[in-house]
Image 1 (tube, helix red, strand yellow):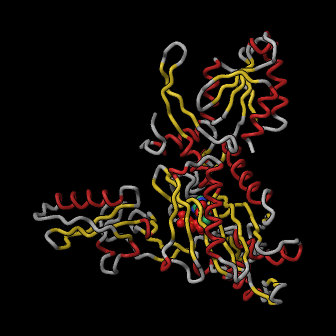
Image 2 (cartoon, helix red, strand yellow):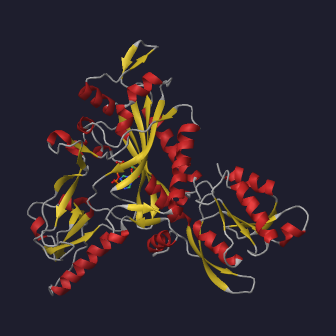
Image 3 (cartoon, protein in one colour):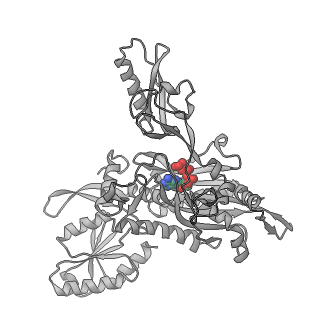
Length: 508
Ligand code: ATP
């Protein structure tokens, strides 16, 4: 059985399953698609909604210290000036003047080709799991083509932000393989601009939000004044964000329209922020495990102090082993009181809280866990996907594709299958059970084709259980069904009451 993390073609398999089974489609596919935008199909929308609902239940409903809000996607443009996004929300962009390709400078790698201690030329490669190896291969090929004699030094992997002015014209474009066409990196603001109202001039410029977080800061006073929250407390929000990414890629990992689930946890200015920060990292890790992500795929990356923004106390990313490498899934940042202070200064409205004990006003500090729903979605698919060889009753071996999704987030919780579709006694009992189940759960009724085929269909959709209404159900006492478990493929008998108890235990 191939381990999902070791399958070299896992990404292709995931994209293909996502399309084939209606999890994810390209946006506007009949028009050729739009790079960086995606649609969620009938199974995908359920899975995504379940991820979001689990997060909301655990983050908001099941805690006493966190409230939710939903703010508008387009906010006053001054919000983005105060937050620093107008001036600084940019990635370094490099253009290839010949191919018109655009690259993110920090994802475009290069190395000098050094032969006998002298620089003989340059090679480049785009960021991948094998960047170093690709550059080495390119350097060897360069040496062969130019028929250079002497010892080739190992490549030194650098990104384009590290290229000196004199080196830029010498580095080949990944698109053409020739030097001379790449521009120096320049800042590219990733906010999408639009105009509000009938006027289309500078006075009407507005932005689609690049993060949901500013909504929590801008509504901070409203929440404090209209609810009974007391420090420490959090404000949570789920919603769409938009970033004009230079290189959207890796399927839904980096797109231009995506969903974020963010929470701002406000603490006293004298509170132990490092402790609160660590507690939130642990919370996020254990939440990811609760929806089925295995420990083996999760790790932490602590941002080095010297690379943090000046106001940031510390940032830790929870990383996930995607098919294309270990990448950021969830960022947990200790942001001091920077954001509230910025908005207080820009709006002229103090953003303070009164401390009953010291009788002093102060601006609270904040811990921010920020995650993308789509990135969790892709992580969940990565961890859940498996292909197995299975043997049927007749001894035939066949391949089955299965999504081992946690029952918490599986799009369909149970499939109800009458053994035969033309036997009314079976279908009546099946329909009655189906009607009862669907009041509380997302369930499917499927009477099409051989039972084995129907099980496979549900395996691919990640349905944890199938119940088959068979002759024992109607002929033997006890009104029991066959319960077929997705992962073990074990079959046992179960009553209706036991089935509801099973669901109540696992779907929470
Ligand atoms: P990256 O370094 O990968 O661009 P980031 O550090 O800019 O991400 P944040 O601004 O911290 O990301 O956003 C918080 C979370 O939002 C990320 O951890 C990620 O899960 C999600 N996210 C950010 N950008 C995208 C995107 N373009 N597509 C999908 N999800 C995203």
